[in-house]
Amino acid sequence: MSLTIALNTENINKLDLSPAKAVIDPLLESGTIVNREQQLKFDIDYTRDPTDPRELSEVPEIRLYFVRLDAYYPWLPFLLDWKSGELARYIAMLVPHQFNRTEGIQYNPEALEIFVMHKIFILSDWLQEIDAPSKSRLKSMAQTVGYEIDDSFLDMIK
Image (cartoon, rainbow, N blue to C red; front, side, top):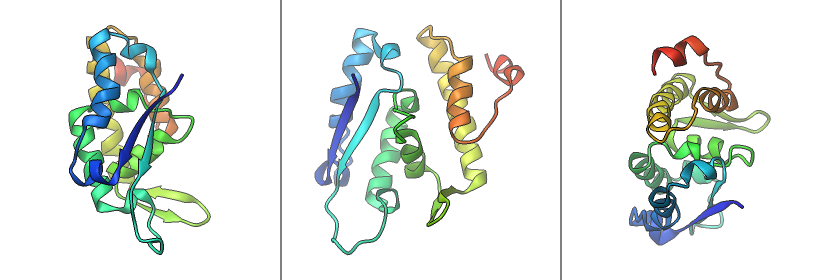
């Protein structure tokens, strides 16, 4: 069963994290968060001019909301449904990028590398705190955006 966080224009414009907290905090309180890995999706309903050609990740107000959300739940990529593209969309909210008509999203390579390493460090520590094996999870997350993480590196940061 997947989890969905519904966001609307008002939530986003007011940086209101209550829709996310309503879904995520009960998982933390009950200790069941590790069982919800890769099950979270966002349903974003943001009012824009119908002629606005931008993708959601190009709208500054939406990006700012996700920067705020990431600051509050820095380990959130653990919950995102990677297979449905939620991780890629989440990263697009936080990492400079461009859209290419033929190749899709093109992240700034240096910014993406910094983001991935930052999340590896955060998730490694957090997964240890909740007693969840981390090595394969961290390697898989990095691979979804084209990075190979060596086991020796992960051993070093334990």
